[in-house]
Length: 98
Image 1: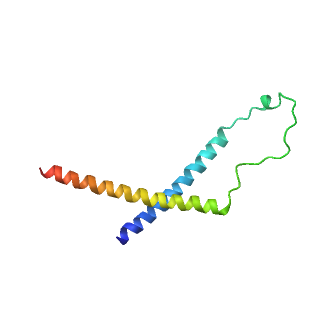
Image 2: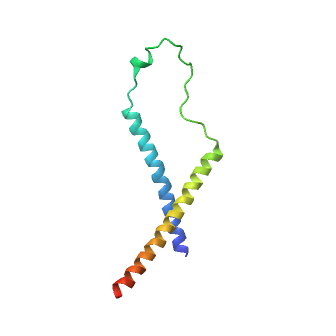
């Protein structure tokens, strides 16, 4: 039981790191491939805004909640895969011995 909990925790941490790595990779890809449409943006003579903001500023609670939910999701995913694997291996043993 202790080994399963350690494996679930390790998988959960790897799952969370992989999620953020994919998010960073996609952000880098979109940044590299972005081509601004300068001609279209200056075609109108409206006044442009004087400040720029990127993304949203989440509170520390929402960031912690996101990481916590990812960790819990990783544990649930690991345990679900383990249950499915055990069920398949037992059904293969039953089917193979007939």
